[in-house]
Length: 269
Image (cartoon, rainbow, N blue to C red):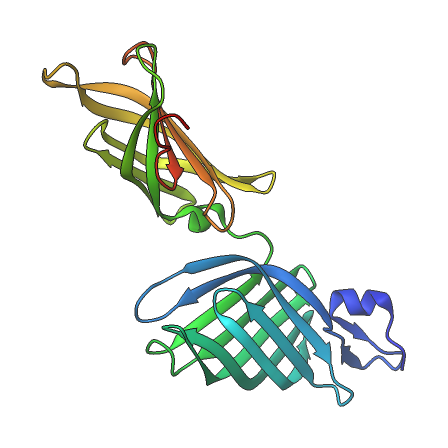
């Protein structure tokens, strides 16, 4: 029986006799969340799982992740319930640990409604006390992807000076669990900046956040004073190209401190 293009895209359909059939073949684009005894919700964006339908009705699954390795399942069983296609099977994964690549057993399950609405799980019992990778179609949640520690140097500018660099600075973003982020920037040079609930979003291919708070800063050796500040940041999915900008309008005619990756430029560059 020839399946229609619509059936291919939807994943579940009926044949001409009214019986349920499954066609789940295709490439699924989304993100993964990794969980084990050592960490929770470690996110990887821009992942792709490829599913092929075998001649006997089973499924072959191929998942190659730059973060987690290569997963292969050759004969997952398929079933249909309502508008959901379910797959389950077992196979092998090649994962690198400490610079070495080893092969591990893994299991696979999936619930597929369409090419853009699918959830899959890869479980590897022998890795890190039991690891589960959950793949979900769609864009990675901005708050989870943004969470982490960003290390680099700061570039400070104001009416009194420009390009004052400080190495070995860091900003930590923590997901609050409600889509917002806690922002902490503790600098020996510029003070302690904290935002309780910055908003997070994805915009034009970049992940962004923004918020406001108060920073305690001492001027000229005097006692610290609280000043209003705003923060905005942007990063790519790999979090290796980012900019985090703190602005304190009431300090030195308007102070801007920007965290950037890497080390500060040397004099004369």
